[in-house]
Amino acid sequence: MVIPVQDEHAVTRDAFLALMGSHPSGVAVITTADAQGTPYGFTCTALCSLSLDPPQLLVSAANTGSTLPVLAARGAFTVNLLHGAGRRAAEAFAGPAAERFGTVPWRPAPVTSLPMLTQDAHATAECRVTRLIPADDHTIVIGEVLHTETHTPATDAAPLLYGMRRYATWPTA
Image (spheres, rainbow, N blue to C red):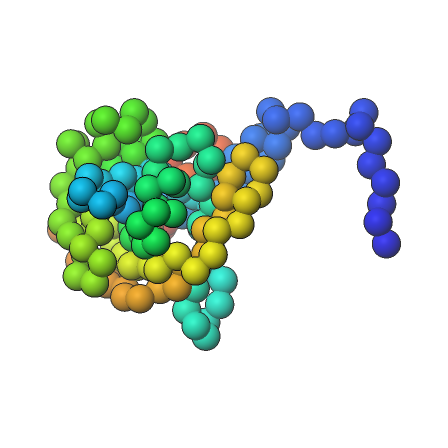
């Protein structure tokens, strides 16, 4: 059954941001590179597992960002799940594109050679794009996981969270 909705009941942008901002999420940095090897990336909290067989995940990417067209052309990306000390990476990849890779150490991932943030991530997943689904101002990117790696940082390995407009770390005890 479809419930009719009147326009006067439409949710405002601010109300929607407040709703989703009150729901903490893990923080990841999605990375890729163009054909010349120039790295691209963005901070992402809209990430989830999609299927186990085959192993797939789903990422939501803004249509206005510089990374999405490169990711689509490359057909691959890396998910870097940030740990508690990875806040600087989260902030760098949420900021101006020119400053992202200049302030955060990275190395090529073993399978795709795409950027892997081993100092700021507690785990990474290398993915092949299987589908791009337009969804208004974002695109849903479905990726098949080709390789995963867990990192042992010298710092706190608890996951970095974001909600209510602030960062926090998953409690360890």
